[in-house]
Image (tube, rainbow, N blue to C red; front, side):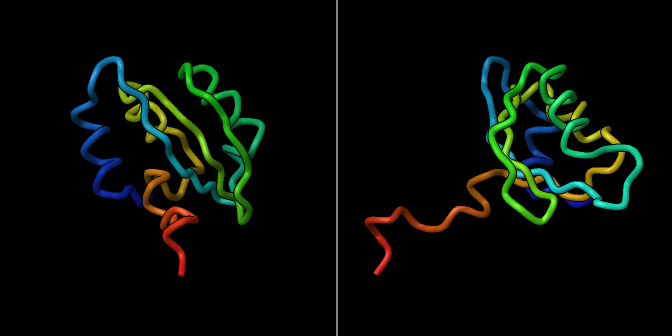
Length: 94
């Protein structure tokens, strides 16, 4: 599983009371996780499932203290911070 550097940092040094916006990619061929299972997992971890981004990728938000548990979920192939894939704000695009 690929974890971006910020996700690795949060996984091993979470800040209590803080949340993090994540982008999670699941293996479409996995028998362990699908969109519904990911939704349930996120809810169990007291997070929110934001939306599907396409290509088996989902936007979620979790308490930082739950990131380690999410990383233990079978069938996830990539976890990055949402800021990793965001472009510049619309007012900065030329």
